[in-house]
Image (tube, rainbow, N blue to C red; front, side):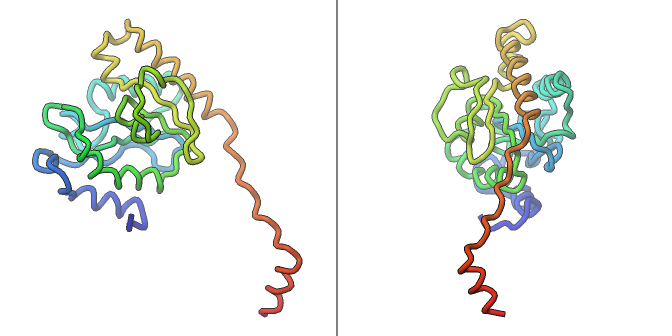
Length: 211
């Protein structure tokens, strides 16, 4: 990765033609929310409304995400939101492996520059990407994983909850539980940054001799 800032990565993403999805998009869907926030949501791919507006999670699934954020006292200004891939697959089909690989550097740049303390992965594709494991969301949702100093909490994708029965479904109750876990983790004190070790006496003497 050659980018020095998140803005540089975004500028390249907005004109990317590395995979077949570039030919059918209206626009690249980069990110929404606050890149300074400690909480990041990672979804799968843009849908119809996201492709039109250039923002992630602005359709029905986005409304449910906003509702769930509100249930724990947050809104989009208190998190960042992005997807594994930045262009809409035709017909909202699943992303293909080569498309995920083509987009990989952009999500990795978002993770590197934003440095979220808590990552919530929404659905199978985001969970497998962040955990680097071929897991099933139904088996790992509601658990917390520590990855590269960050807490990762997988949960169902809001679109899957809506398609599976919405508010009356067991998946919706699981989503509520998982968001309460997110709130609990965010309330924990951030991990302490270790102090720089004191130089050994002989190193100090050597350093002073250089001046």
